[in-house]
Image (tube, rainbow over all chains, first blue to last red; front, side, top):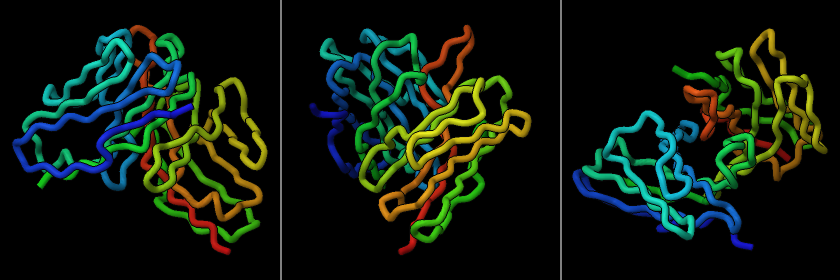
Length: 116
Length: 116
């Protein structure tokens, strides 16, 4: 049983460009959350998708957007990239919305984004 | 504003001894606490959790202690093994208005190094 998968593993972009990161949740999971982990920091919650809708959002600007597909996979899009967007982007999946983070969240290995 | 604080960026412990990782939190309304472990090039994995109605939870070599009056929790690993070398994150459910919870709020992490 595959866990959470993310692609690509690494990505290098320049300032002002746009990027799309992809995530496939663990089998049986229907909720996907995205996190940004900057160097030396803990993961920070970006937003969560359930039933193809953005349910909650952390303190991130509208340059960060996402999408969830009918098969529960998800994309994270970042527009107008800034140097400060360089980070590890983690996707986490879980089952159901009601339990939220009280249900164990399974994380993918992340996508390392470098903005030059 | 850090709601969850891990004040030790790193900790070095000899193999076989006890490792104690600490975490402080600011909001007395938090009712659930989690520890995640992260190896390089992997996503965080759930380790152990504790509800605020308890003051101790044990799972094999791992025990988490909760001191609500001090708003402090600690993770004890006994005995420490080389495979325990990783970054450990303390986390709480991210509450939003309306009483729900979505993602997790993480501390900055403590890098535990087990020396042979």
